Amino acid sequence: QVQLVESGGGLVQPGGSLRLSCAASGFTFSSYYMNWYRQAPGKERELVATITRYDGNTNYADSVKGRFTISRDNAKNTVYLQMSSLKPEDTAVYYCNARLFSSDFWGQGTQVIVSS
Image (tube, rainbow, N blue to C red):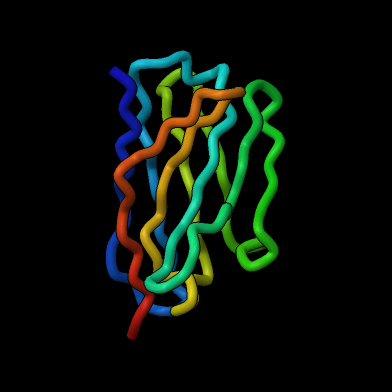
């Protein structure tokens, strides 16, 4: 049974940091591209960051470039999103996604609220 379980969300002040984790099980984690998406209230889901399967190349949305870092630990079947210099506009539900060809798995999401 495929599972992606996000954790690490919460309330943080502007300028603060959070580290999201996504623990994967039920599939060959190291073979999958891993992504973080987010969806703010009233907005469409957007791709935030991507990390490739083996060489760990990364790509980021312009809105988070230089502030967020995606990483993965294939030994622990976990992908991370380190978020720094958080802004109120980063407030959203953050989703972990695993993708390989037609296989597309999603976590349940973790809420991040950036507010003073």
